[in-house]
Image (tube, rainbow, N blue to C red; front, top):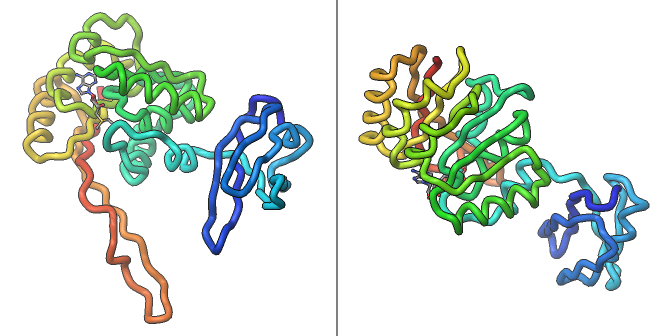
Length: 250
Ligand SMILES: C[S@@+](CC[C@H](N)C(=O)[O-])C[C@H]1O[C@@H](n2cnc3c(N)ncnc32)[C@H](O)[C@@H]1O
């Protein structure tokens, strides 16, 4: 492992998995299970183990986006993986793409997009939320995600940059949509996320007025299957309604 690299330490205690994301450094990392000398990681590879001063063994892994999703600090409701997946799939997001995103919130969607795209620019109207999202993005080691504090309704009209994908997860998306065409590259995608039917209808009207094509609004559901000695069935606790995703193309 290299100095400064982000790694995940996993251990098991009384049948429960505990995990920590840390930077490889010369420091000691304090856990309930003893102090880990992080400089030992310089000699290690993913899959190796390291032992705390209390004798607890930790397995070393490279964290991936779902790990950052689990560890991210939350300012509000972040977008869920079940909704992020279709956004990536339906827009065909790739390593050449630049993305405009708003509002940043906890930065979860921005982080997932940034783990694939060349660049993500995300606007958040609240400075405290923008600051928290910047911390999450730093923790995920993403240097290509820029968070600006500002109201996207005002800021989008001042932007000179062009984007391949625009993602909007704000209450006032309908007021942003009339300006999206100007900042989208030809063939680019607009994606909105809206929790309510009423908001979604306003979004559809704004999209129709702005002359996009291939417009579709979808809801994605997730149903986990539970396995027990009594039988196998859909889990009774589940992710319920989150939001509607509308995708449109320039
Ligand atoms: C539901 S959260 C977004 C969650 C985010 N997509 C994520 O995955 O973490 C909506 C965010 O939009 C911000 N917001 C609302 N209106 C905005 C605007 N006009 N411009 C920029 N940000 C805005 C809110 O402060 C809030 O943090």
